[in-house]
Image (tube, rainbow, N blue to C red; front, side, top):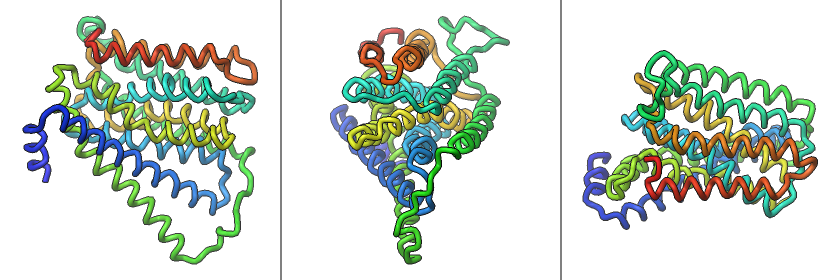
Amino acid sequence: MDAMFNTAISASSLPVLLLIIGILIYILGKGADLLVDEAVVLSTRMGISKVLIGVTIVSLGTTVPEAAVSVFAAVKGRPEIALGNAVGSIICDTGLILGLITLFAPISLKNSVIHRQGWFQLFAGVLLVGSCIPFFGDIRVFQSGGTLPRQMGIVFLVLLAVYLWGSIRWMKDDTIDEKDDETEQAQWRVVTTVGKIVLGSGMVVISSHFLIPTVQASALRLSLPEGLISATLVAFGTSLPELVTSVTAVRKGYGELALGNIIGADILNVLFVAGASATVTSGGLEAPVHFFKLLFPAMMGTLIIFRLGIHYSGHVFKKQFSIMLLCIYAIVTVSSYLGIAA
C-alpha cells in the first residue's frame, strides 16, 4: 500500500497534494478529538478532576498528532520534519492559540500550577535549543546548523516521566471526587469507551503515516525546505486539537483548563515529541541553519513573551501580550513561506 500511495503522490499536482494534506490533517484532528473526548469520559468515571485531566491527559491526547507525525518522519529518515513539527507546534500553540484565546477572553492567572508549569515550559524551550548546539564540535550554528542527539532524546523521555509524575503529585490537592452516576455502569459501556480510544489512536497513527510523503512531495513542488513546511502547515494542522480544545474550554468558562492544556502541550512537544523522535534515530534530529535563524528565535520569543505576560499581567492575562504573541506567529509564518532564513 505504501508503494502505491507514494507512486500516486509523486504523480499528483500541487493542488491535489494540498487537498490530500487537508484531508489527512482533518482525520488527524478528528482522531485526536475522539481520543481526548473518550479519555475524559473514562477519567471522569474514575473520579479524576477535570483540571488534572486538562494538565495531563488532555495535553497528552492533543500532543499525539505531533508525536505520531514526528516519530514517523524520524523513522522514515526525515529528521528535519520531525524537529520542525515539534518546534512549529510550540510556535503555533503559544503564538497563535494562546494569543487568540487570551485576546478574546479574560483568562485568570490565579492558579499556582499555571505559574509553576509556565517556568517549566520556558525551561523546556531553552533545553531544546541548547541541546541542538554542538558544543563539542562546530558551534557555528548560523553557518552549519546543529543536531538534537539521540542521547538527549533519551534524557527528554526521562524528564517526561519526571514531569508527569510531578504534575500528578502537584495536582493531588486540587483533585476532587467527580464521580457521577455513570461510574458504575455496565461493562459493555466501558468496553465501548476503550474501543473508541483505540479507534481515535488508530486514526491519528494511520493518517500521520501517510502525511509524511505528502508533505515531502509538496515541499519539492514549492521548492521550500521540508522543515519550514512542517513548521507551518503541518504544525498548524497537528495543533488543531489544542485549538479546538482550548476554544471549547474558554467558551464553557474553563479558561484555566485551556491555558493549562497549551502549557502542557508545549512541554510535551519538547519532552515527548522531540524526545521520542530523537530516540528512534541513530543520528538524532537535524536542526538546519534556518532553525537557528528563524524557528528557534520565534519559539523562544513566544515563550518569553508569554512568561512575561504571566508575570506582569496580575490576575488576568493582558491583551498587549496577546497581540505580541500573534505578531510573532504571523511574522514566522510569512517568513517561512517567503523563504527568509532558509
